Image 1 (spheres, rainbow, N blue to C red):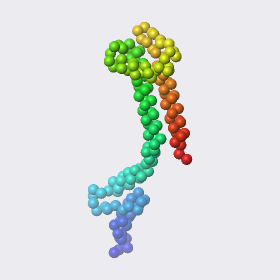
Image 2: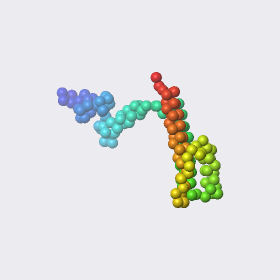
Image 3: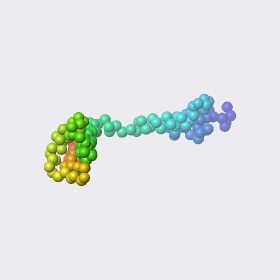
Image 4: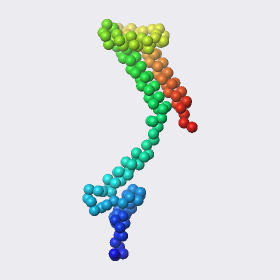
Length: 154
């Protein structure tokens, strides 16, 4: 063996690339053209990303917060749809509109009569529904803050 020749395949790769792959001591076989250092670096980077992920989504408080957000989101969606249908003058005799009005009547019950409805031309804007949407949004935010406080990690 000559003095300038590499002693092993690993030494050959270090000499050819300047170092081992990604500084992790991995050597790459350069005898196979389909196997390249670029692919190996990508695999190492992918492994680092998988190993570096935090698993905060698997804690119970994260699940509870997602459930609260989903429930408040559905309530807000239904109230917003009712507001839109009332504003556009939807026919309350329609099955879907009647169902939506009956469900949202119970949701907007605590806020009913807080503000008068505004009638402009043929359009009606029910301000108590807007107040209910704001109220449910604040209730959802307060519940989320309370749960974050209760489940605070030490």
